[in-house]
Amino acid sequence: MATPTDVGLNPVTTFALVGVLGVGAQWLAWRLNLPAIVLMLAAGLVVGPMLGILNPAAALGDLLQPMVAIAVAIILFEGGLTLNFKSLTDAAVGVKRLVLVGAPIGWLASASVLHYVGGLSWATSAVFGGIMIVTGPTVISPLLRQARLKRRPAALLQWEAIVNDPTGALAAVLALEVVLVWQASASAQEAIVELAVGIALAVIAGVVAGWGIVQSFKQGWVPEYMKVPVLFVTVLGAFASTDAVLHESGLLTVTIMGVWIANSKLPSHAEMHRFKEHATILLVSGVFILLASNMTRETLTSLNWQTLATVLAVILIARPVTVLASLAFSNVPWAERLLVAFTGPRGVVLVAVAGLFGDRLVQAGISDAAQVSPLAFALVAGTVVLHGFTLKPLARLLGLTASSSPGVLIVGGNRWTVELGKALTKLDLPVMISDPNRSHLRDARGAGLRVYTGDILSEGAEHRLDLMPYQTVIAATDNDAYNTLVATDLAPEFGRENVFQLARETSDSERYALPPKLGGRAIGAGETFLEVQNRMWDGWEIRSTTLSDEFTLEDWREKNPEGILLADIGPKGTLRILGPDSEPKEASDTRLVAMVPMKEHRAKAEGQA
Image (tube, rainbow, N blue to C red; front, side, top):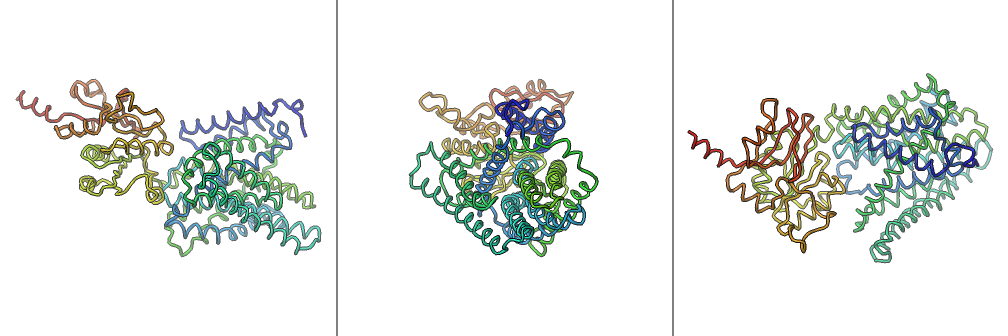
């Protein structure tokens, strides 16, 4: 094992650099609206093989592979926490086919490409082909976040990635055991028994661990402040115990554990998922930086035309054949079939498992297995870059993006929200008004606005309502407490900077003032529900105006001295809700949405006449 004195960076500096590069790449991708995975991959290659600043294998030594394995286990567990069966709805048939039919077809198709195009032996192709079933939840999640797909195609890609991740690893284990038995002329019966026992143990351990967590949390056996630590060590314990029996079976254990918890109606599930989601962002960033920077120049220079041909064959032949054959004669629309068929990015698990199994095959006397690691990296890099830049345009071409312009979810059906919704809809922004009371939505339906009758915080809304087209939330019911509840609950999902509510009646009093973590931001002049409703009854209207070189913001203010600005929309269609302390953009082609007292304007015009 290398010591810190043998390398330029010690382990602490390595961790710090990986964290800065990973989170920095995620933030830069958000600012530039670029695929985060591509930037993380580029950052790792630059500081690793290109500049030689970071060498994880030397700095971390034998700890590198266990760290990556634990990170992947936590990522898969977090993915399992998102797999609530109620969220499948109409995507259930497609997911079952992609997992039950697609996995074996994908294994055969990938192995055939590796053998006939990549020139690998059948033994190596069989093992590597099993790993290639994996489409990578570490890659899919950031891509879905950036592409903003509709609910069903997003569910297909997400479920396939998370469920097939341990499935692909176990398929590779099966193939590896068969190859090693064949090479060593050992007992095939012993290998089959070992594999069956390992998989059975992984399934049982996942169910038991998930059931134990659910029961202990529901019965109050674990205090609130210890729930996340207990969950964390349980995941690590379940992964390590089963992985010690059969390599990579721990991935199946933690995935099943996550799915069990996700479908148990655990009250603290949302808080746990948010924490694990934040941890996963850090882990995905770190793992990609580590694996990319761990590549050597020799590995990169060993890639040739045959490697390129293999990667292209996997993307253009093996993946489409697998998906189209799996979804044949199903109710999945052709547009969604094509999107899934040409979206198959590979991620961390592929690189990690391929490197490990490649070494074991080489030790068993299969020399061409040395090509597995560089080929795995080429496949990951190629698919990440390709799908990172093509998923969103392809989805838009097929009509599967949620919306070209981020919309507004308005909670509360009343005159003010209907007028605001009509004004935003005229500006080509998606708008939906939600209210539990059907009669409150009568005017919204009459205005042609999209409505949802029900509680926006209900389980039905969570699993069946597609909220992807909406980026901003405005809570504007006549119930201040409910507005605060909606804003507080939806803030982690939409971002606190995108959640607004009408002012509370008692918010000016210190006795009733709420801490900043509760509620949303103020909108307009910071008025209450009663104040905005009174303005509407007094003849105020909500209208939009486009600024230009001839009609500036100063001209608008002069024409509407009492007007209250509510939002502005930039030339690129970006919506920004304005509050009491916000100033609108003054650029040309900016569109303003404001409340103006139309009765006064008419009276002035009549007086001048």
